[in-house]
Length: 333
Ligand code: NAD
Ligand code: LMR
Image (cartoon, rainbow, N blue to C red; front, side, top):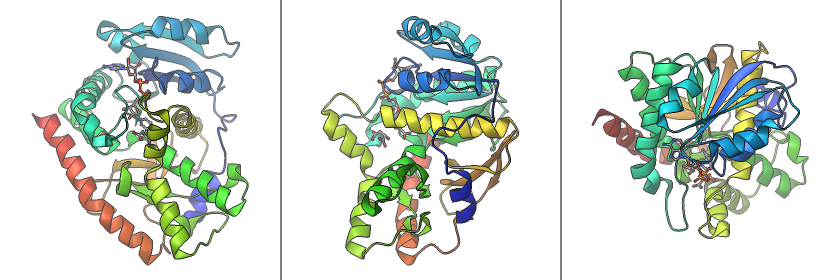
């Protein structure tokens, strides 16, 4: 399985096989939304790019629309235009919501972002129930359950189509392992499972390709850096937000994999946070194999993970369960 993950994921932003899908970005004028939309605009895989935000969308759309690539860019602003932005979409990416400031956890964003995501999820359930959704807004561990509950409420939930985007954790793990070992960063692959917050982020460094071995002290420090990489950026930005450019790269990487699968490429795999029976947590990120209908197969946990990694997973599950419960209770209020 690790072989499958590392073989199929070994490309940066490859899109060449895929053409002609319709993608919407909700929160398109934000710190992630703008650079991610730029990456999507230049991709042959995208024929239409619908940009939605509550502010500044026309300017972002006008700017991107001058780029001589084939994707047609359309601007939608304000809740009265939300459903129109979503009709006919194949893929919807949701980076709408507030980012962290130093000293905050992702869960501290819950009170603001839960209702933003719920409103957007309800609109997706109404207007593009067949689309594949990638939830980026934090706290992902809770916003994905909120989205699922909105789809269930509308009677349109398909567990193969709603995902939390945890690709930034994989991107960081690839980058940090490659740096330490002097590997080619572009072709280093480290699966990351669990959730997307602190100790719920579980890098499976034993499954790295190329293989990477570390003494326990280095492994502890590396694992901690991957788990808390988001804090490193929040601290460096000093009040001006959290990761935007690396997240735009990660979001585009995830979307391009989905688009290649939609276009018929076989065996495309990305770690994603989904409803799951792999552990006692109801949602859990593992390598997911995609096809034209979304998730084809949950590849689960690789065989051969270490005792250290099993302990990290066991430590992740209770926090995940609490965040999932919080999201579901919010949705049922
Ligand atoms: P930002 O503040 O720069 O941009 C957010 C955008 O969302 C703004 O343009 C804002 O107008 C828009 N928005 C707010 N309410 C909206 C609504 N109801 N409908 C549509 N758009 C709305 O923030 P950012 O840095 O782009 O981060 C966005 C979110 O992504 C945050 O919650 C952040 O924590 C999260 N994030 C997740 C990951 C991940 O790995 N999944 C990585 C980085 C950031
Ligand atoms: C990240 O991992 O960088 C994001 O989830 C943003 C954050 O709040 O750290």
